[in-house]
Image (cartoon, rainbow, N blue to C red; front, side, top):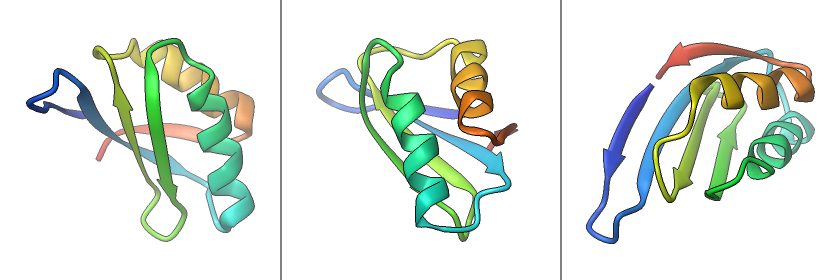
Length: 79
């Protein structure tokens, strides 16, 4: 995972997720990750398999992995 802190204190992290193939997939992954406390925004892109998460602080990778698993996909690792 690549994490970057911006000037307002938010952390942007890009994850690689396998198995997404459409907008429904993007919505499922985004919805589950959005439930993690501290997440401000999520953008999933099926064509690249990348999920960009903006959060108040760095997230525990296990929490992200559990959310992606719940959506029916696999967290591969850093993008």
